[in-house]
Length: 324
Image (cartoon, rainbow, N blue to C red):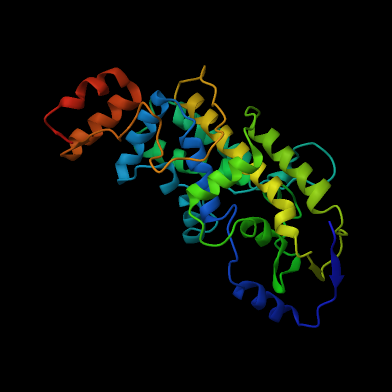
C-alpha cells in the first residue's frame, strides 16, 4: 500500500472538526453495508428458520432483516454506555483473548454468543428474541470489519482520501461502495467480487481473522506512533474493495448459519449465493410473510406458535383472524 505521512499544520480541535464535517463518500460497514449483509443472510436461511424470523419481525411491522440491521447503532447513539460493545480490542500482535480485549466484559464476540443463546431459548419472550435478533444481525457484521477487532481502531488516525480529511476507521466504514447505491445492489457487488465464501467458525475466530487483516494489510505500512495525517493513494478504495467484499460476504453467510442454528435448524448449511438478492428477499418456500392477526392477542398467539410449534402455525394460516 502506497502511503505518505504529512504533519498537519492545524491545531487538534480544527483537525477534529474537519473530520466530523466531512461528507460521507460511500458506505460499506455503515448503514447500507449492514443492510447488504442482512440481505445476503436472508437469502441463505432455511424456510423453517425464516418463518420464525418473519414472526419476530412482524411484531414491529418489519418484513426484512435489513430493516433491523442498524437498530443496534441507533441504540448506541441514543443510549451511550448501555448494551454491548460493537467491537473487541485485540492487540495487533499476539493471538490470545485477554481481559484487555474486552474491558467491558460484554464485547461484540461475547454479545453474539449471548444473544444467540436467547434466540435458541424456547422459554425466552418474543420481545426479548426480537432484541437478540437485532443485535446478532448487526454485531456479526461488525466483527467482520477489520478495525472493529483491534486496539488501533483507526478512529484516531487522520487520513487524507481523495483530498478530504477523515479517519482511517471512517474509510473502512464508508469508502468502498459508490455513494447512494441501494443495499441489494451492494450485496450483488460484494458477491460478484468475492464469490461464494465458506462459513463456520466462532465469533472469536471471526475477530481473529479481522485482526490479521488489520495487522497484515491495513497497518502494514503505518508506523505505530504516527499521529500525523496519512495520504492514502488515489486507488485505495478500489485496491481494498476485494477484502471488504470478502468480509461482507463471509458475514452474510455466517449470519445465516448462526440464525439457522439458533432457531433449531442445526443441520442446515447456509449455501453461498452466487448472485445478489432479488427484489423480493426471502426464501423461495416463504413467498410472503406470515398472515397478520387482526388483534394483539392473535398476533402474540401466532408468534408463539411459529417460534415454538411451526406446524400448528402453518395450520392456522386460514384462521379468520388473519388478514391476507
